[in-house]
Image 1 (cartoon, rainbow, N blue to C red):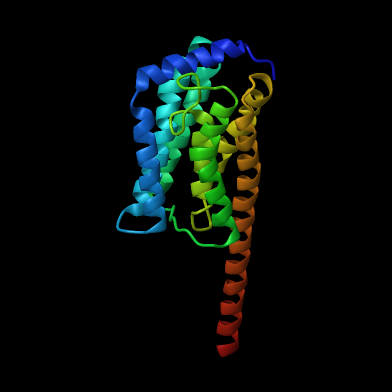
Image 2 (cartoon, helix red, strand yellow):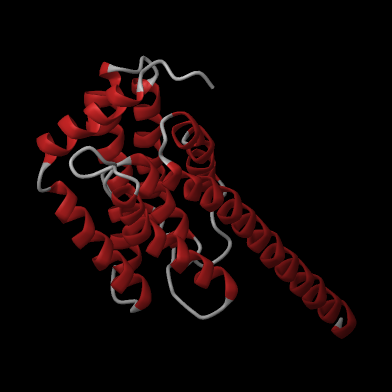
Length: 231
C-alpha cells in the first residue's frame, strides 16, 4: 500500500497530537490498569466497566487522532475514524448494554496469550519505540494511538468468555493489517506485533467460539435423546 505522506509528516502528527491531549496518555494507562484488575477480580458491573474502557479507547482514537489530527496528512483518516468510533459503539452495545462480554483470567492458553498481548501493548510497544529512536512526543502512545489500543483490545477479548460476538473482531482485524503499512513503510517495527495480535487473536477467538458451539450442540442432542428415551 502506497503511503500518501512521509515518515517525518507521520511523526510530526504524533508530536502535535501528544502535545494537544496531554495528560490523556497517563489517564489511558490508569484506565487500562483498572480494566485489567476488574477483568481479573470480577465485581458488580466490572464487565460493563471493562467494555466501556475499551470503547473509550476506540472512540477517543477515532475522533481525536484520526479525524482531528491524522486527517491533516491522510485523506482516508476520517474513514478510519468512523471505523474506530463504530468499534467503540459495538463495544458499548455488546459489552455495556447487552452485557454479552464477560471477562475473567485463567492460566489456560487463550488468556495467557491475551496477557502477552496486553503486556506488549502497554510495556514492550513503547519501549521498542524508544529503543528504535521514536522518543516522546514523536511516538504512538498506549491507549491514545490506534495500534497499541488494538493490540490491548485483542488481549482483553481473549480474556472474555466464549462465545464472543464475531462482529467485535472485524474492525480490529482490519486495522491490524492496515497498520502493517506503518511497520513496513514508516519504520515502525513495533507494529509487527499488531499483525501478530490480529492474526493469532482472531483465529483463537473464532476457534474458541466454534468449539463452544459444538459442545453446546452436542449437549442439546444428548438432552433431546434422553427426553425421547424417557418418553
